[in-house]
Image 1 (cartoon, rainbow, N blue to C red):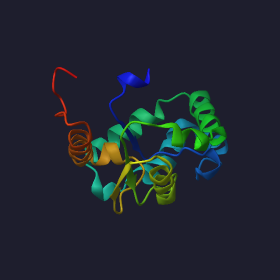
Image 2 (image 1 turned 180 degrees about the horizontal axis):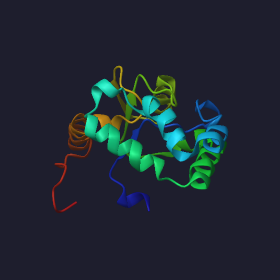
Image 3 (image 1 turned 180 degrees about the vertical axis):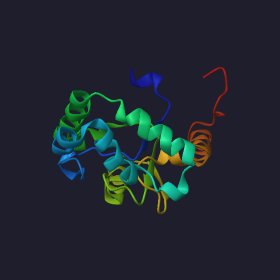
Image 4 (image 1 turned 90 degrees about the vertical axis):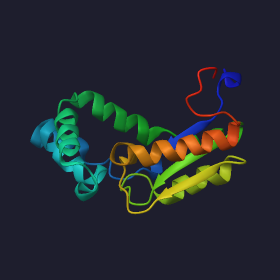
Length: 162
């Protein structure tokens, strides 16, 4: 229902599975070390431990380790097989891409490609931030998105009549 969508924000977004890196090897790590081992491998890829609250880092690690192996592996397969390239130019609402420059999964070029493919889109870079941008820098993400939304729609973010 496109008429009900005011804007779109992508965050650390891979739209072309063949370009998403560091998915390979997940099944062997899970088979060898279980979900706790997979989570330990993933944590430094998702976060720079220095940039994140230690409590959040531990919580994320613990919660991630609870995931079911088949769900994680099926999600990786889904991501790897996706290709939304042809759909990007069809997007007609204002788009903002939040792009961490340090993601080991999705390149800066992926965000730039979205920006180039979607007419009138905007891009916001987060230098040195790893993949889990929205978790490690929630306030900065929220401020960036609110500013974009207000600028592009003429409405204040959070207004009740939206």
